[in-house]
Image (cartoon, rainbow, N blue to C red; front, top):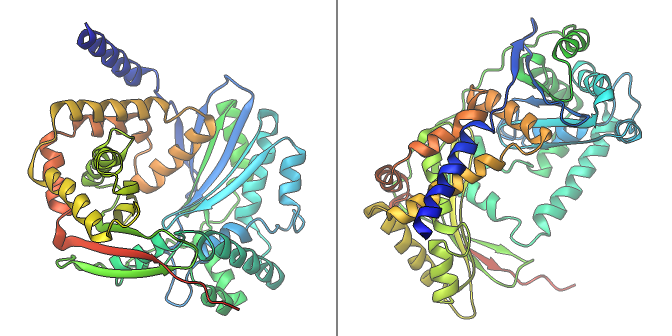
Length: 440
């Protein structure tokens, strides 16, 4: 009876995910190259206006790291029609909220307003794109903001340097070797001319996607977009030609020290394909198999059964050109780090050499079906997904059909991909250790 009910439940889940989650959208280009995506959802009187720029931490020259993240802050300073420091005041006083974030590959700005303020949201983003005020005072102000963020999130945060250490060791020539936030000496060395040139190169309509999602009228919204964005001049085409990494063919060993921790960590890391590659989807399934939930293979074995680790995890860090894949653990008591390495490798080796069970495979499929059902639960989330799939995957409709990729992945493919990318000679082994703070 249980099996019958389980089968019925799975069938219902697939039926729901196959139809109810369909996201309808309209997309087109303005003459200046700005790609526009509109999603109408009149179920609540809210609207999200957002712009994603195809610029991230990797878009820099040597000695000028961190510009994209710096611009995430700088472009809130003000414009010719918005006074310095007035941006957030305008948004909040009109019942809205806004934010921005930057990855190694893109920068995303958005506002969420009551739908009667759609025009305000479009005006704000057109102001940001058309004529931001970039001057030395704004640069000096935002340099201090970024420095404080770096101190808070990286320098003084427990395990805050773990991911930067991975990038430094997994990449030798590609810009992913440097942290998204950059190095403060590079920002300190940046001139006003450097910053203005960066803005002129990357923050242009033909390097951006505008998404408007929520309680809108499509025709009226198109007219407003034409009025606010069509006059913005097209920029030069952005050409990227980043150096390729040589394959890792021999284990890399690294140590790092953190004065903010008392418990060490250890990890296995791998350089993997960019997120558009099919193998990246398979690796995402492998990380879920290994460590998603207390019944996952690594957690049950190392934390529950053998009580060797306080925490264990496996996750993929998706990026456009190359990904990073990390399996890590924090030891219990006197458990040696090399013991944790061996235990983690034992589970990875099983995936490389054996098919996962049918039961575990069905469990994986159900988890990804469930994620798909819940993935577009808000208008703001839909806006982000539409921009990301269009800009970084060149396929806006992945918002509806990406689940088909996961459904098509087989047990045999999971084994093949693990064997292709997660071998011992392809890995970085990192010991992340406490460092005694210097006494005053």
